[in-house]
View 1: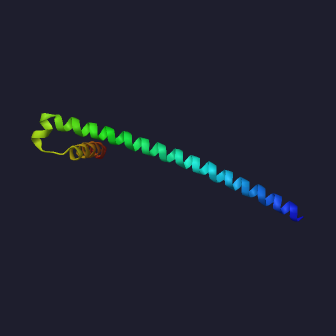
View 2: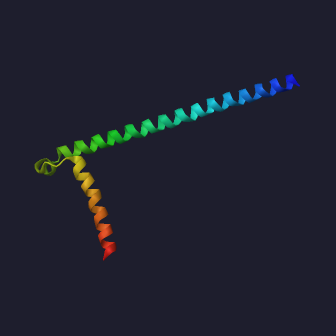
View 3: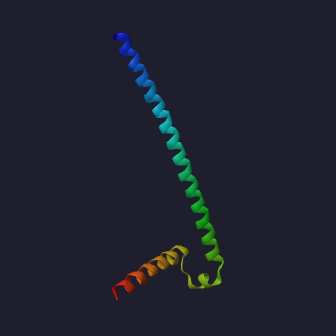
Length: 86
C-alpha cells in the first residue's frame, strides 16, 4: 500500500513539473509577443512623430503630434455622437 502511494505521488509530482514547464514556455512566448508588438508600435509612433515634425504646416502651428492625434480621435467621436442626437 505504501509503495502504491509513493508511486502515485511520484506521478503527480512529475505531472506538476511538466505543467509548470509548459506554463513557463507559454508565459515566455506571451512576453516575447508582447515585447515585439510594443517595439513595433514604438517604431511606428517614432516614424509618425518624425513625419509630423518634418511637415511645415504642423511646425508653424506649434501643436504637438500627440495633441493633434488625440484631438483627431476626439473630434471623430464628437461627430458620431452629435449626429446620433439629432
